[in-house]
Image (cartoon, rainbow, N blue to C red):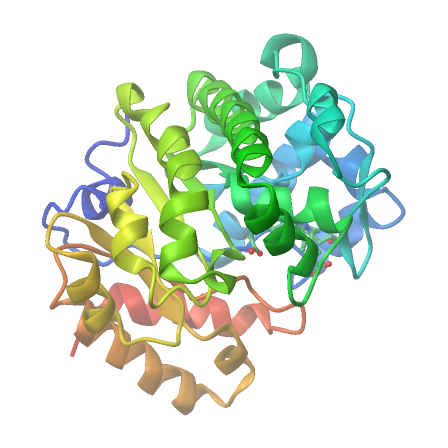
Length: 342
Ligand code: CP3
């Protein structure tokens, strides 16, 4: 692997680094005018399916911000679409599913993913990007629970009522659904690493909606299956969710090398909950990037300071870049992180 000596991979492995590595979730996206220009009138899914455009979008934030890693431009619902589940990304809303998951019969619509046949464009995008990049590329997938929430709710949700209701009323069916989605995610990640990605991130964005007990019983086995399913590849595995203060220990136990942390909990306290055997990633509140620079700077400095009291720190936001963020602020954050703790 060519990036073993990079700050990003070293920090993920809890090895000493000269400068704290930094990248941003949703760094490729609407905060960048060059992204908006490229997207213009192209539908999201068509953009993902075009390796020339998708690779350019992946590279844009690396050039603009000087981040220490790129993340593939794609989406967590791309594997679902690739196996024929009717799902689209609706502008300003998110993934919308034609026929939501309701019963055991719907399991048959979730066939295995065959990457060479189903997502050749993703493989081609990874190859194009990694040929250009001088920093590691992060591959990613959705965690089974978060993907299931879109399948069951039919779209974005505030309370995950249908998802939680199915989880508790038909735990066996829910478990089979998550197990299938785990297989899909493993195939999606393995294809990305096979084509050149140097690390992977499992996005369980909505896991924070669950209690620890529900997470452990109904969700953790499937996420652990995804993380175990790529363990032999030897690339760092990042496990991320939002509002997961009470789940951080379990998310680490699920098999991650790095646990993503949002802004609701101080980074050093998060690390204490996760334990000494894993690095942490985070945790600047993306909303603060819209505040005046001194506010941002003070927060970045505090996070860097806390990061020193963890076994390994990858600087990031606590969730994705907000669309109204001034790209200039993110460039300054990168510069400030690279200067290091005071
Ligand atoms: O820069 C990157 O982070 C890489 C690309 C990426 C996208 N989606 C592109 C995208 C990644 C890693 C994702 C993951 C993803 N997708 C997650 C997990 C991360 C998170 O934010 O919690 C989730 C939950 C999804 C599902 C999804 N896709 C939602 C909720 C939305 C709507 C968001 C919105 O604000 O419109 C999408 C669409 C999407 N995926 C966009 C982008 C750049 C916006 C679409 C557009 O530009 O028109």
